[in-house]
Image (cartoon, rainbow, N blue to C red; front, side, top):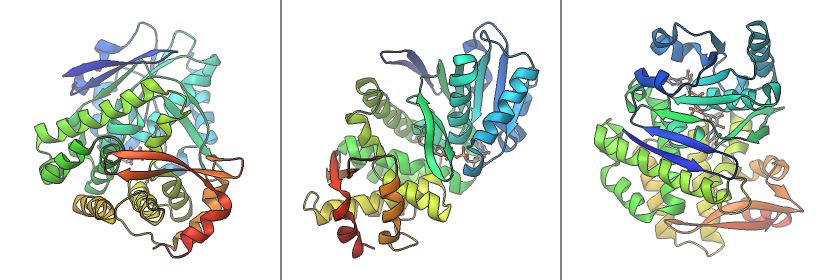
Length: 342
Ligand SMILES: NC(=O)c1ccc[n+]([C@@H]2O[C@H](COP(=O)([O-])OP(=O)(O)OC[C@H]3O[C@@H](n4cnc5c(N)ncnc54)[C@H](O)[C@@H]3O)[C@@H](O)[C@H]2O)c1
């Protein structure tokens, strides 16, 4: 087990990598604890939480909403949740995003923590303190920055994920390497197959590396003023794809990274050999790399996205494998660039 803290101006958050889900009570504070989870996660792990009140939310992106918050608030009020209570999200990115937001606004904020049970949430979603919900199809349009007390990541729980969900998490690991860590990208090229086959030491090495990258960036720029924006590589295209096609987050980000890297080549920032390396690695992971719709059709959603400021679209592009750059593209140029992208 490896444990380290993410220090931010507002808070310290403990990251517990390789800790067993069975030991979670060691990290709970005094006071009443409420579990928030979904029924699939509870089918597998519910017996560990039978001594606690459990609030079940619906599965899937369509449940990351204010309606789900209402359901949670209703239960919390009825069961006497007060300022000394603690919310523990047990699940993937959706459970963690919703739990963190509910805890951040219930009675102006109570403490919370996560047991992160998907690969995608272990390497990305549960780390870094971004919590929120969608509204009218706009991803994460309502939310806060607020760090959990702890994030527990047990790699053994990943064995009960279905294959498609497991693979989706590799998208965020490959993203972390592509934007920040060329040696990690090379390690992935070398040993991706072992991690895909759940070879423990290799999978844990990649999870640790991705979490460390995210933790470092979050410490430098918790509120996403500059450096943290780079973690959005692939996400501006990805969120538009999620909204328009409903494909899962990890897959949308995979296609989004290819589109952003292709744009980087078109703008003479990136060599096409690096684009090919990125596509090869994503395809080896079994992730999609081609947009199911012409990229030009993503433009309208992208320019209405919250990352647009003062007529500029803030994109993250690549200069090389391991090096991302924040790029402010005038919205007026976007359509031209996307027109012949595939
Ligand atoms: N806050 C952030 O910084 C951040 C970063 C990246 C992604 N996200 C968000 O994360 C969400 C996607 O998260 P996700 O990919 O984890 O999907 P998810 O939370 O929908 O989980 C996928 C499915 O896996 C099931 N599941 C979870 N753990 C399981 C386990 N151990 N065994 C069996 N089944 C299990 C769940 O019941 C669910 O049906 C998106 O909403 C995305 O926007 C947030």
